[in-house]
Length: 244
Ligand code: PEP
Image 1 (tube, rainbow, N blue to C red):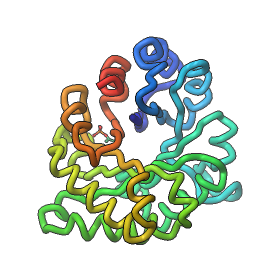
Image 2 (cartoon, rainbow, N blue to C red; image 1 turned 180 degrees about the horizontal axis):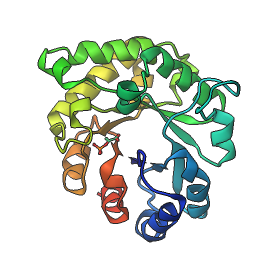
Image 3 (cartoon, rainbow, N blue to C red; image 1 turned 180 degrees about the vertical axis):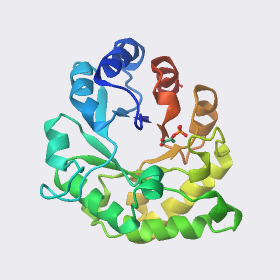
Image 4 (spheres, rainbow, N blue to C red; image 1 turned 135 degrees about the horizontal axis):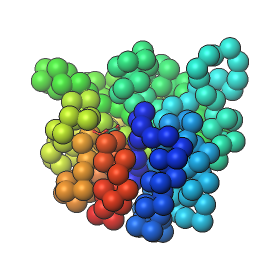
């Protein structure tokens, strides 16, 4: 159960969040809990979750170890802050910051090289869904953004299916729509990496997940977890999603 805070909260607000969240979900043992705050809050978040089962992730990661890449943050920097995960290829990065499947692959490889678990996002836009292209779009994103990993690398990633039309819009995919997309992605995994990899890979659903729709989404065997934006900003909401 992963939370993406997007560009919200200061370090002080991060500490205040965890003071409320820790007693509600800090020892949740039925799942992994990962919260991805902005880079500037990673250290405060890591400190705030000490002694709990909560893990901390970044929202992006540079493809290089270091160098002349103004504005980027590298894997070793994220690791040094104490984080364990990195979101890669979020649709907001693809939409506003020219992220492509090619850079998604490079960032994913960098995360793995520096010991971080990548949460790799894929998903179709509304016009692509309406044109009946959802499976083709997901297949293309998989082919160019994920299929270039080695089987050993692939075993360490988490995939997040996030239909762009459902992110921050209040329009959740129905559990059936989400499960169909997850099946399509898992089918690609099976073709490329084999049946065992397809069974093992965790595919999260993201897009307007709230406390009141988590249970029906999670009732789909295809849905292994959720990636939550807006509702992860509130400790009570996110705890009730975690404890669905
Ligand atoms: C996200 O940011 O990944 C997301 C799914 O956002 P929201 O839950 O607000 O739709």
